[in-house]
Image 1 (cartoon, rainbow, N blue to C red):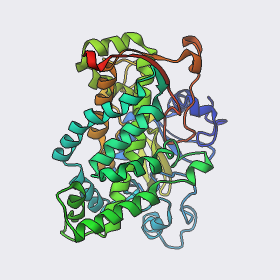
Image 2 (image 1 turned 90 degrees about the horizontal axis):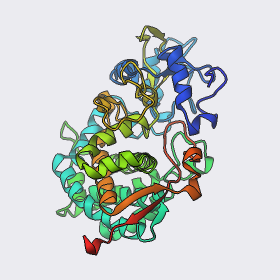
Image 3 (image 1 turned 120 degrees about the vertical axis):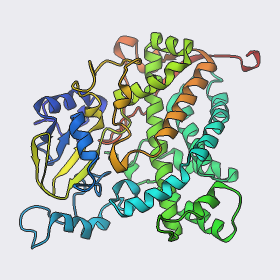
Image 4 (image 1 turned 45 degrees about the vertical axis):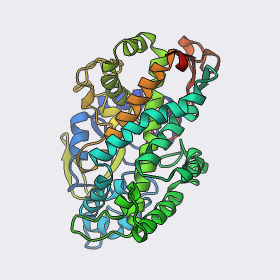
Amino acid sequence: MNPDTIDFFTDQAVVGDPYPYLRALWERSPVTREPHHGVMMVTGWDEATAVAGNAEVFSSCIAVTGPFPGFPVPLDGDLGGETVAGLIDKHRAELPFSDQLPTMDPPTHTNHRALLMRLLTPKRLKENEDAMWELADQVLDDYLASGAGEFISGFAAPFTLLVIADLLGVPDEDRDDFVKNMHHNVGGGVGSTNAKALAHSPLEFLYATFAGYIADRRSTPRDDVLTGMAEATFPDGSIPDPIDVAKVAANVYSAGQETTVRLLGSALKIIGEQPEVQQRLRDDRSLIPNFIEEVLRFESPVKGDFRLSRVDAEIGGVHVPAGTTLMVLAAGANRDPRRFADPDTFDPARSNARQHITFGRGIHSCAGAPLARAETRIAIERLLDRTTDIRISDELHGPADARQYHYIPTYILRGLTQLNLEFTPVDRAAR
């Protein structure tokens, strides 16, 4: 994997296994510019946390797009008396996804994040977690019946869709419609090299639906989650437009669901591939939380996101000119040998696994991290409860020494397109 010949953003060679490329970058320098698009690739743990934690110097306006399509105006050469910071503020609304929380900078981000935290309260998350057990069983009843099945579409996607529908208070009568409209979007979207996937974004469906809910609850309040969202205000007490609330809900729905599907896929792949690890989890369920942290470190569902330097800066001793696009690579930083010993080995008992930066750092750290952890823990517990063994399908993925897996074709997300499992279900009536 030569960074001079491999284009991380377009070459399929790094989709299946990006880690040799990321290691080659790190060995060159934890902060180094790749030659194909001029992106400064940040693969060191210290350096990545420094960039992600400094919103004043590094704007998030390109967080989910990076070098494509690029900034609307040139940010180098003669700026006509403007500063890079000024141009970012002037033109950021012209960028894709500029209305989504991950691309916002303070003070707009501060206001919209406050709306999000009105939704993700400890009380609401606890209520949602209580419902997850029943939702997991509901999906597993069909999935486990035949003794084999494709895990991503058969369990992970429908389960996470139902969990977030419950969190956001989507009415029961509308949930089938959500599953229908959202399910086909799993695996596409931002960072995809699949034009068809990009053309079928779920955001417009989510915007329209949630804006309608919010407007309805403002005119006719009820004792439900949507009314609480409708009554939420910005920190200064002003009332957001329904579409602003809808966009926060849409971001939770689309981003949270997609990444948790990928996390579940990686977790079950490891459980199916490593029977000794599976048995340890069966014998002692208290090991599951640290197992999940190591999955998050080992296979981050988000390889990385982007920042744009507002001013000249220095990261890890490397000069970063104003106007530089940086990719903060969690997938690289989570395998930085300066932070994690023997980083390419999966160790479910790793003592510092939780130091991974999969959920980000700074003001954009993932507010839904407790939700993702709870979903994954409950899904694993229920799968272990309701099976005596879980195996990878040799017929569909090949023998253990020659497995074949396919990953979604995107430079941002990391996850399997399919995971075919075999298992021996437990008779629930006999439990």
